[in-house]
Amino acid sequence: MINVRGISCSELLSEVRAYNPGADLSLIEKAYHFAEKAHRNQVRLSGEPFFAHPVSVAGILISYKLDVPTIVAGLLHDVVEDTSVVQEDIVREFGSEIAQLVEGVTKLTSMSKSAHQKSETVGKVREDNQAENIRKVFLAMARDIRVILIKLADRLHNLRTLSPLSSNKQQFIAQETLEIYAPLTHRLGLWHMMWEMEDLAFRYLDPEAFQALQQAVDERTRAREMVILEAVETLKEKLSQADVPAEIEGRSKHLYSIHLKMVRKEKELPEIYDLQAVRVLVQTVEHCYAVLGVAHGLWMPLPDRIKDYIAKPKSNHYRSLHTTVYGPGGEPLEIQIRTREMHMVAEYG
Ligand code: MN
Image 1 (cartoon, rainbow, N blue to C red):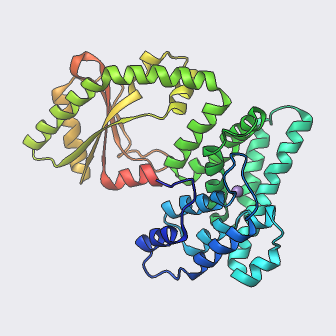
Image 2 (image 1 turned 90 degrees about the vertical axis):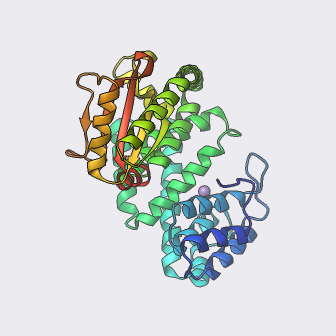
Image 3 (image 1 turned 60 degrees about the vertical axis):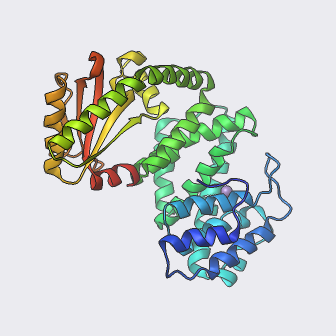
């Protein structure tokens, strides 16, 4: 989606224009050149210009369709921290709203840095309640939610570009991500960001377990692909006969959530039913229940695996019908049924 090698200013502007046609883009343009100049002689450990980082962070913020001040602050988020630019320069050039956003992000960054130094001297991982405290401080310090969003985009891009760092640093950042940042994405309902953060953190925290699981899941997924395809085709045909317009897709779970499930429930991979599931998207709630009826007419449901999160939504507002059936070939197959609206909430918050 976003090219790490540096997005041009005009590409950035046209992406913003696409979802915010009336926006005044001049500040974004100004911030782009301001940050480029401020970071001019800095390089990342990977050897690429440092400026590629704030631009990528802005790109992530744009993919969440955020407002202009947030994108501007995303471009500027490291200039006070890492260059000779001072807070007063930001106020003068970009006004107090943007300056406050930048200041908020800078504070969160220095908090994380001092936590890192402390953990290095103490030489142990933080306790759980400490992580909870840090999350609270984060939320309190960042009274403006946009500060958190910029910090999350910053962390996501740092995770994506973690490989040149020492393994010690990688481990710290991965651990901190699971303790502080991923729970914040969860709280904010940013599921896509959470999945990506968790899988990246898992990869660096426990590379062996990550690779073993990835391989095992790949093998099972390949073996099951035909089954899923057959299930999708059969369901499509029956639903069109029943006059229920639906969009059907296969989906797979992200690795970290499989890992947690195996650890928590002490299960082996073959015992996890919802590695791969079929997802059905329809227009109305009535159609959700109609799909459930059609699916149960085709395949026998497993007892106790029917969950009605439409009648009784999860605490995070997740709504869907879930059932697990003995699908084609007699293997358990999870089916998730929801309206398009429920889907948007489930995926993007
Ligand atoms: Mn940064």
